[in-house]
Length: 207
Image (cartoon, rainbow, N blue to C red):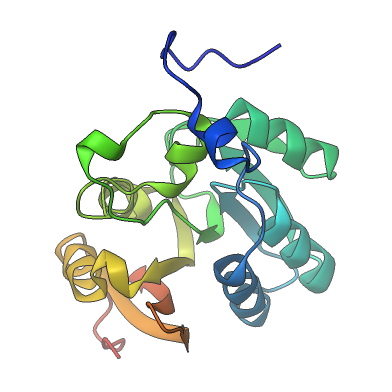
């Protein structure tokens, strides 16, 4: 039985690529997980947003003792994360999250810039594509982030230089968030960055 993506008659992109329908851990997942365990405390409630396989959430839970809730829009990802032992809620971005409840959000979003004629709207494509700018998912996330954070809450957002890191930081500032590069790694085709975000305060400056 296959998932209905609303594209009857069109070939499934994941099948064409001969790759899984759920995003599997890669360099970006590892970088985010390694950074998150340095920032998260054992008594935090952590949201692993866009959990995919659940890799980041599992590492945070196992290495910090924090309570981790996984979330994804894909039912396939939700099932895989649940089978890995994470409590899971299915939903779009932060919509299922109550105001002021989360101590930390970790998010490896779809960030690859993708032309409209290259979009296939299957689950794997939705895990990878950030629209034409690469920021189609990131910007709505930033616009809603402050709402869900508890006092002294924080977020760790994985980005690529392909996405336009300064444009992301500008959007964060416009939504009352202060940003700092928490970690980065350089590759031949891109630079990966973990951006640390907190609600803007007078004594916290961008770095």
